[in-house]
Image 1 (cartoon, rainbow, N blue to C red):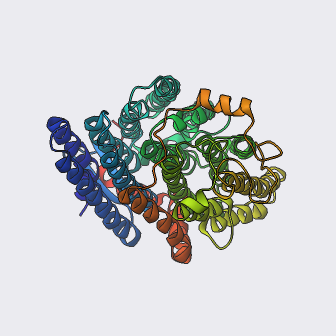
Image 2: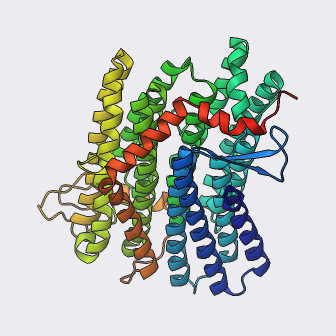
Image 3: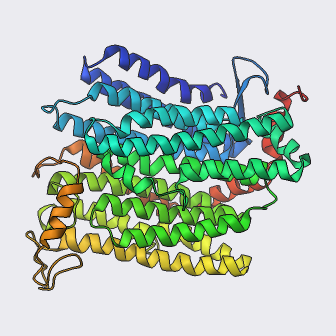
Length: 534
């Protein structure tokens, strides 16, 4: 059964090679290959999750080479959970992209590039979650990043190339720090295997261990968009096509959070940088949500909310208790799904309304009521309205903060409540202006909403500012492709399912958290394959 783990990485890689060979020919075959491979990875992830939850961490050695020489893949509850949700999200986004591709088939574009690159992205994500050593985790990150460099500049417009350049420079800096940290740990311990590192870091001089920890957390913090390492994100993500933005927002920052969870539980469990992480969580929450409140473009607004809600996850990592890690694991699953769903809906808004500027949109609740429902449900979920999964995750984190009782933890509890309320305010602003306000900028109640004049008209300078900074979009369309709508409905339904199965999912998250905080089972599962120091 452990032979399934390499397939989760190899299937997308092999399929990407086949699709590159096919090139632009046989688009129907390309679509079938993509959906089949993504569905297969999802099935593998579900099997691994069941086995990891029932029997403990699953371990596989690639090529039969023993660790630490060989490549170790490990699926424990956390990695299997992350892989399962990621596979479900990437499958839905691919179906959405296929619908958009078919609807836009009359427009020339690098369609033969998107499909193989997207599969390479999934291969990197799967390798990152299953990596049993730091260097393989680095390789997984780099596979994912190389694919993301192509996807974020897809189409080659000036705006995308400019934003992509910023993204690439920041990503390369993060990768350089990560690689240096790996070198420091290898030089000090003689291994990069996570199970061995967990035992050997404990006997390192405190200065060496602290240096490696700071470098790793900085690298992961850049990838996770933790403030102040997050300012690249709002300028990069919104420029990409809707499916790319959705999968980036849902998945890529969570790889950084995953790395932080591994580092702070398996490698550096003493919590020396707890105060630093708590301060970063606080600033991420407040700066992110304040940035969201002043945005007039839906994509940028959602990008800032992404930064603010990363703060909740860092809060859980920093507290480091069983309840906090449980809530953080549950919330990261929720947030992957919710952010993806909201960006997919934004893609529908862009098609239906001809853009994502709040100054130009209006009346979508009347002209596209289904799109309105699909936005409203995940928006309320992200805002933390009970009894949705966003409320459950935030409640768990806030309760963990209250149980901690420290001054900084209590400040973060208050900041978490304020951030949730301000997130709700920002999303209600989107609803009022894009969906509830009548077309032409006149509000039903007669008073213009925020960002408009007294009569509801768009200020001339604001309109020109939007026109200057906005990516070119297609004219509004009355008919939305069924595949795009269906994939979005599936994502919203998945987010609601977290509420329906909230009890079992929280319990599973608790078992994953316990496994992280008591890593003896993880170490024992890998140790038979890791001989003494070499």
